[in-house]
Length: 116
Image 1 (spheres, helix red, strand yellow):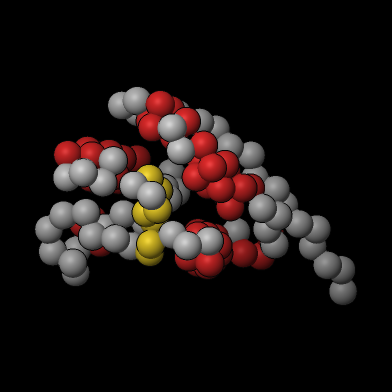
Image 2 (cartoon, rainbow, N blue to C red):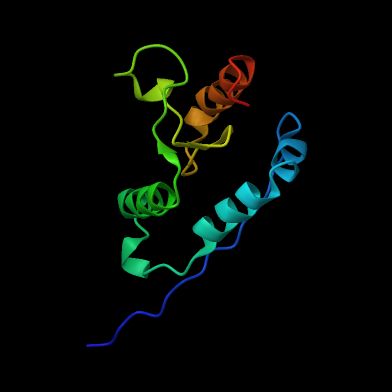
């Protein structure tokens, strides 16, 4: 039985509505996000549900708020952001283009409500 070697993800960055400026004003948090996302991972955990669970474990252990309510009904998954720390929000996307609009709306609403 052979063990799988760890994988390290690389990041592709996009800035939306001055996100770079916000993140550079909190450089330690930006670095922490990058570190949490690029830690070695077991390939068996990289299915979408496994990877989401792995990220949840990492972010919560690092002191991030899990699933904070951004707007609306707490039972509506679209009303929550994945993680929040020091007014920096993280939304994990898995390439489903149909969710881009609601994800961007979460950041806009959070910004207008004072969450940045």
